[in-house]
Length: 407
Image 1 (cartoon, rainbow, N blue to C red):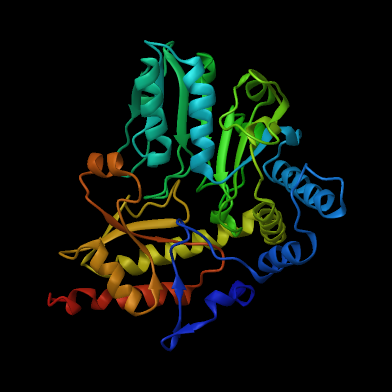
Image 2 (cartoon, rainbow, N blue to C red):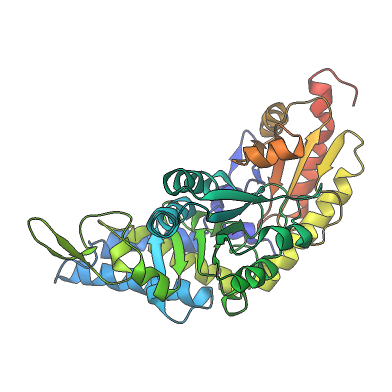
């Protein structure tokens, strides 16, 4: 397996004598030197305010920003780059859809179908919309492995279902939901389909022609770019009918004393000075990912996940959630150590320079449904190695002993 860590200085730096085994990629990924150099080059040579000036720097910033939009469109298989809206993250993109589309299209008696496994950012905005419009939220439940069953989909999608908003790849158990089936069922009732791709886009091949959702959202920082740049894909016919979410410079066509006409798509959704640096970083990140190939990334992560499960099963004090069947599982594993709070596990691992996440992972409804308060989560990317996993396993062996338990 190639050592991609050579491109990531942060993963080669020693802290208190050892490098960091970074296994918190579900929260954010690290940046390759190529991405960092692209950011540095932009700030050194091309920094300007896009869409606003006739001078070289503004023109260059505009060119880089719009080229990034085209690259994102191509990356997810979209022909019309106007369907790509830059946001600051997937959370803002979901809020934009909820308020600009949901708030203006729903009424009492309509149903919003969510998954119990959704991230809070794909629940809370819809709660606000439901309270304002009188619409009802309905949840797709899951089994003990965190997987949505087709029978539940069949039961809950009906003529009242107007919006379906589902995580493609869940951020706790790493389950790939049957999005194609959900979309197929939703289309029979003309429901609007929103896919949260924050966890899936960095790790899986996304065939938008096959999926054909109305909206897709994801964040750049979970796929090597800097923080503060996110993506909303929306079908052009949807976007043209939607009202803007934010108001200000560049999203207007003309402003009078008492009325305003708005710019065309995508600009009417991009108020104010945009994050050109973030767009540049995302463009460079896509170049890096495409150079490796999504198929290769899936293969590497699959090997890491299988290896982790095999090693964890050797420790009788580790409970793996979602089971050890890795069918429809990607990029992460949730677990707990018997008798030890996940936060204590994470703290002890950190003393060995091993980074994981512990908590409810912004999925409190899912945790409650599964009878859990919190879990430990190790999440992978292509630059992780078997050595990272070995360090994790070795450190987990001593967790109970540190706290005075048998181990």
